[in-house]
Length: 242
Figure 1: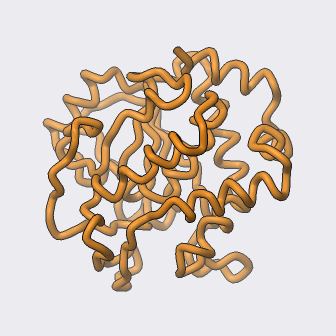
Figure 2 (figure 1 turned 180 degrees about the vertical axis):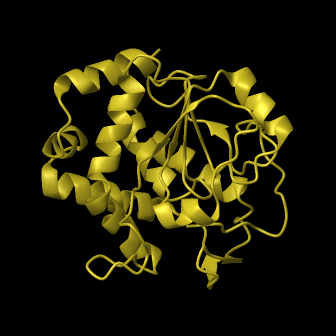
């Protein structure tokens, strides 16, 4: 969930864009009414190259929403190479993985419902920025664009009318983008601890969405609980829809 980089670069299908120094970069559009060219998803920019920066500039990126914790940002800050986009840090999870009250789960099966429980404020802030003037084109990223980014993009795609099946198909592309089709990959996190990056699966995302719907009835109702208004959702759809 942090800097879990596979040992080799995978062969990527056409759904992905080549941004040197950025992992798992792809257009989130084409799912539901979310149009292409306005919302991208990826891993962090902490190894972004000058060439990669020029390609981001060519995409017209105005806003970069970073879902990582502040501890991660201190170790692996995003690079810019002269880019002048707006950068927002909207952590999906508690301040650090060892938070006494809310420690980050080590297993994926617990992590996804936990993210649904803790991500409300981050999701609301992201939706408001994406729907505001100048909010797109935007990139949403975490460390590798798999878990935290996966949930955030799933919520946005759902609000744009995408089916769970289409959302899940897009979500699972991260296994290809991160070279996880053959199984788990070891990595070292921001604390220097060796961990294992595991492939994602449809039941993981389903468990997060089920938590939201079980506790709040629907994704919009969940967001309303955390302060989103109907005007916020209308603005999001206006800015991002086809």
